[in-house]
Length: 98
Image (cartoon, rainbow, N blue to C red):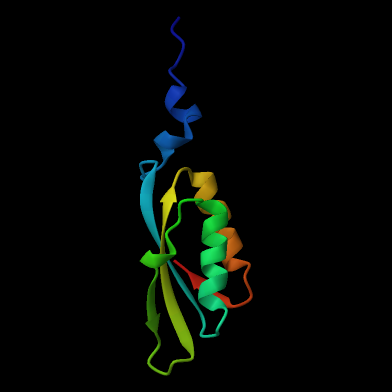
């Protein structure tokens, strides 16, 4: 009797379409305040110590009320990305994370 190969199901990297590590852009939309970008970059640095704030892209809404912020982090695991998304969505200034 042969034992089924379960190595693919025990390796979380096999269940992901993302190859780790890789650069991973995240789009964040929030109310345009003085602290929004600083707050987002601070969270990004918590999860990616090599995060480069100079790569941040900003796109204000047509009315200027909201600001789209694209950050690019070095993704090292699904867990890291999940926790980063939770931290970003938990910020009261953030409305949407994609």
